[in-house]
Length: 423
Image 1 (cartoon, rainbow, N blue to C red):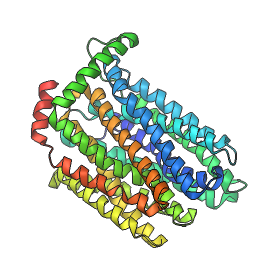
Image 2: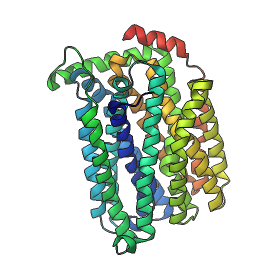
Image 3: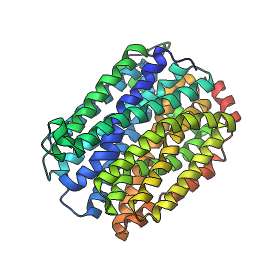
Image 4: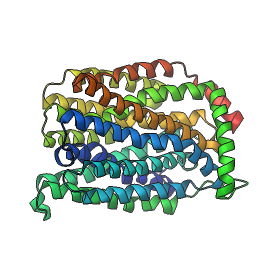
């Protein structure tokens, strides 16, 4: 693959917004919420954190297909991406303003920032078709490049944020609390700066018969109904989306709740942060290696392998006793986390008509975010009912098994053929 400015600009957005996924979503927010903002028990904080994560995902799940349809009709993918990103950046920075004990405001800002991050990803994903073109291998490479840069970029800033937290005086900060708050601001700035190349080098795909926004809203509703009908008719796409909904639910739940789970088992915050760093820096080369392996054994077989690996990780998590076990699981997650995400995105492009990428990625993200509603909520509710974090985390194993079963029913060649007919 020849990396040009368009591909690099698109991929750098992953570098930019992954800082939110690492420092905020997976790292400091869960631990800071428990230790600084929350005033309830460990079980209660897990419940409210799961509820907040699910609420943010629900908003995007509802809006994603509709917004995707409008973007396809108006050539506004870049504008929507900029709008949602701006919301995410601002609200992430505003987390630094929330005082001790104000857990309600912390969750509100977190939910809105998460909506901005997730909404931006919808339009970022849909732009890959215009960036990579029709070549499947190029699409695989571009998707993998984006995720790999995301892991290294998010990991680098997170490393700096961790050093700020552990050695605040070296950075002129009063204590760890001040370091975490400055970290939230640094994420907003990082996100903004490294988003610039995308908006400079990635152009909006050219469409015929472009509509105004009011016309597109009406046309988008009509087209959304048609697309939903097409998704139902396209058995291959529909089956894959069900499979994706199930297995990515487990993946997202592990990403969002792993630190909370470790904290609930009594592991120190510093140990949890080290585990996250391990995952980030293992994931950077692992995504690229996973892509190479996927080319040799087939992308669908690579997805099978990743789902099986996550199933083993879920089972192993039940028996985790000490920090060393947590580190081992962090390595395992790093080996497959980016790979399953990148492979899923590029595999989906094989099954959909390129001219309707916004709409179909709207459904893709709708189901991805719907899964993110169910997973954390499921873990939170089961934890609350059983008063056991271990039992709560076991619920995700069924999601991987179910996703594997549905993925086996997907006929790739039939999907490619139907996609060309609808293009």
